Image (cartoon, rainbow, N blue to C red; front, side):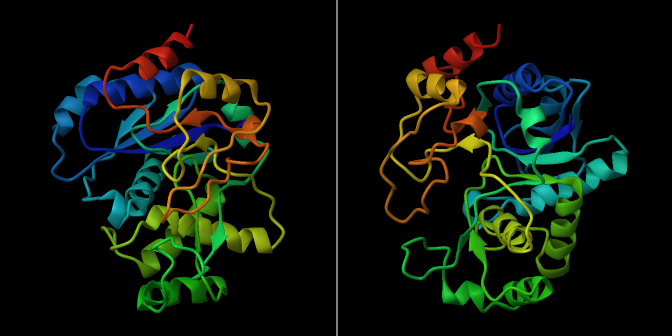
Length: 282
């Protein structure tokens, strides 16, 4: 079974991050977790080091600036490079956010079956997603990135729960460093770089699956105890309306719950939903 590296950018609430680590360690034992503490984080690195003192947790010595709307991929690239430097073994990297929690086990065995878990939608100006724009397409950085892959257009997709084999993410890392700065780029790089690299592999006959996280950031789904029960069953289909200005979700309206292992928008505070998920850890 593949060993997973979870790449997790954080900026505050070390206590909630600790709760998330305990959640990962319960549902995905044996994995590695690399934390990237944001530059100027509300909580200090020392607080994170104390709160997140687990054998499988590594604190990246770099602290880069990041903002969700302006790009996070450079933090994942930094985490990946640091973990290579540590020499700790891993096979897959999973990109997660600090409001995600796992709700069932089996993730390690699942990702072992696929080299990629990415949502990729080709640039389509008929959609109302603001990140699909002629201006971004024509930037020097994007043109260099696309030329290196032999693609005419870039792709977009859900960031949460993307996963990549070590070799594919190594390729992504090289392409990113060659074309983009290790700082916010003015667009959500985590929603574009991974999907575009994945699309290149998909068109060259590499099989993949959607991300492993059910997100409601692009739709009206309310994450509830019932939704979590349906995710845990791995059966059926969930329906919800797309939010204006968002890409469609790869998990809404499709029978893909067998491949969903986590949910987003878990409030980063003590709440009924977080307590319910913790009650599953028995």
